[in-house]
Length: 344
Image 1 (tube, rainbow, N blue to C red):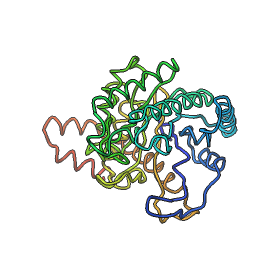
Image 2: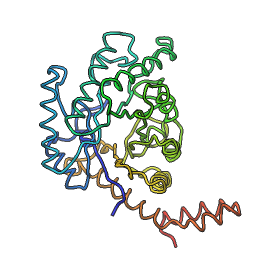
Image 3: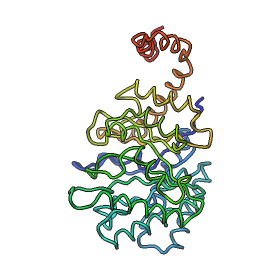
Image 4: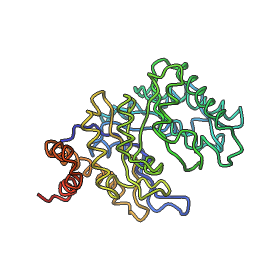
């Protein structure tokens, strides 16, 4: 048994198309994914706005709400809930060089329109969290935008969303690069600084993704710990990453098991989830994966999380204390490695 409740997004299961190649797997129907997620033991679904309401740009506000109600009925059918809704601005032609920080006033207005509609969708789905992955909020050409003005534009946009709905909580998911090469809000520290500058810091927090921390050259467990110390860790996306390359979204723990162990350790030690937070997965199947294994990366990630929970439960804190007192850090490191390798 796990002490955590788990969430997953429909994009975690996809056809394998990427920047350099065509699809390699068949598309799976939305309801079929939802049904399978419930069978696998997930409790909540993560949504982009257009996961819930496709073609939303062509719909009225009331039509968007109606479509969202249909999705809520589907969640109820499988005893699932929505964790959050995230406006997918990075895929829209209106916001190819940023949404909230676009050099076009019209595009900035569109970004807010999509954000308001995402809040509407969240309300219809029965959740109070809006996630912002600021994918294109930065610069491709360093001289094209003032980082000072761009940061202020982000804060203004957050204030507009907070004013639109007095109950919504905004979770910023930081990432230092890709698809933009100079991100304005690249780490949890940036998120907390921006939060403090808004009209209601109590409603602006962080969603931390393992791979994004690695891309910033940081230890994911320290990013988690920093956010928790400030009571700002309201969501996590567990996955793995082979160094500071492109965002890989590999199955959790497959590249750096010790790093994965310490992420679970810091979450368990600080009772993450006690306020209803979910442990989310954001993982992708390897491109060579066939149709019959479309969910295997999710199954593997859940198995690794639960196995590492067991390792944390067996962690000898008395031995840790003794090693710290004598500064026997070599001994402590070997203890951790033996624990992970199953050597008594």
